[in-house]
Image 1 (tube, helix red, strand yellow):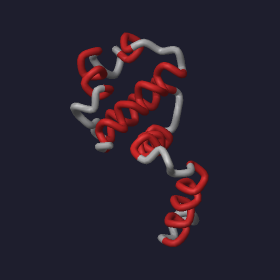
Image 2: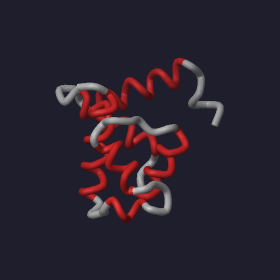
Image 3: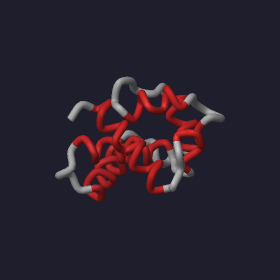
Image 4: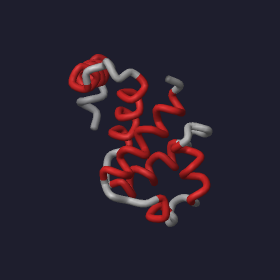
Length: 97
């Protein structure tokens, strides 16, 4: 599955899980743009990702991880999170913040 398609699927699943409509995002996005994202026709900017995550009430990384899990449904979420943690530690980023 293409990453934009996976992102759109994850966005739509999280939106529905939170019982939100596309109209609930009007403060940060038009309904047309949100629909375009959910259909995988476009990908969001980092700023837009942060805004969308804010409406969903999740960290932007959660939305990205959900997209990567949708892209590869056989991937274990705990394995992915452990990998990210290991990479951040190896880069020395866990001690800087």
